[in-house]
Amino acid sequence: MAKISQVSSKYIVHANIEIGGIVDKPDVIGAIFGQTEGLLGADLELRELQRSGRIGRIEVNLETKSGKTSGSIIIPSSLDKAETSIIAAALEVIQKIGPCTSKVKVENIEDVRVSKRKFVIERAKDLLKSMMDNIMPDSQELADEVAYSVRVMEIQQYGTDRLPSGPAIEDSDDIIIVEGRADVLNLLKHGFKNVIAVNGTSAPKSIIDLCKKKTATLFVDGDRGGDLIIKEITGMSEIDYVTKAPDGKEVEEITKKEIHKALRSRIAVEQAKYEIVESKGGNGSQDRKAQQSSSSSQSRPQQRKEFKKPERQQQGSPKISNEEKKAFSDMLEDLIGTRGAYVLDAKLNILGKVPISELQTTIKSLKSGVHAVVFDGTIESDLVRASEKSNVKYIVAMDSKIRQSDARVNILTSNDL
Image: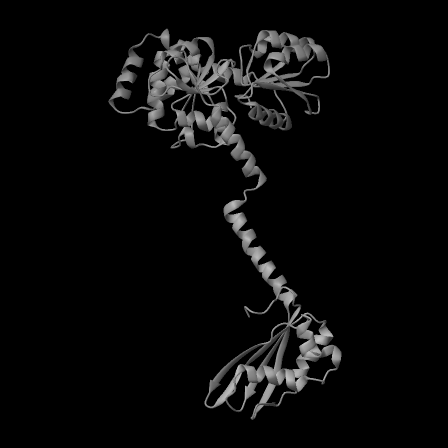
């Protein structure tokens, strides 16, 4: 087969031959040319067809056993179907090779193009499978990989302590404090650029100074080590909120959805300290109970008042439909870490997205038609007054410095949603 030019051939004739004696290949080839000469006319003369390249080299494979010879004949052809079939049929007239009787039987005529097509299809399947398994990621994977690489490149070093951080630490009013560099990388991967690591269990000077100027959320692992870090860091710096990864998980391994959920569930630092104390058992718990029972009656009401404050705010929150609640919650989740704001109409369609720094100006310029504002930040009095003048019905944000009773506009925070 290696000597047959399949590039120019369209068909291959396969025939079997049985010979009642011992002969050589030249004997068979000579019989083919000699006994078909003049049989088919000048146009189908084998010698002329081979000379013009319309018939390829005739291959004969023989095997001798018990004084008899058997084998195969292969003839490549670039003739059309009818002419090739005539050549194939002509082989079967050969009844004698040398002094020995013979019998030729054509097994089939192979269409080389069909064989090539089958080969191409099977090979293409193998290549495609290999690409899908090992080489070719889908477009989303490519986008994620590029985005991840860019965000990893964004990691910086902050302050004299050279702490790992995102690029938005200086520009953001809120910061997220995590334990180590791997935690920063995971949050950068999911779009949070206002994140910084303490690189240990104590608060470096850079962190202490930042917490004095910005609203700080401490984000720790969901294990006992996380509780220890909360105790250490909150005792040394002005942390405002605390949140934890899901139980048994570390910040560096959680998903984007788990990050958003944890940040929405953040609690005041005083409440976090109280919960850590209450969760500890043994003699230490008994000592605290003794201390609490011996404390003055004046301090106990003050403590209860402090930790029931979130409940009163939630009870006083405005009533909204399930549709509005879900829409506001989804939008707020999308905005976490972006320092951006959505401006909505009465059908909850997004009229536009603006930076928080331009939100108040945008509301004043629109004057009317704004049903709600959702943003990643804290509600303050200036924004409330501007919203009241523009007849905004809802302001939705992560937190609020304004009580509902002090505003005509409905105020909703992540805790309300």
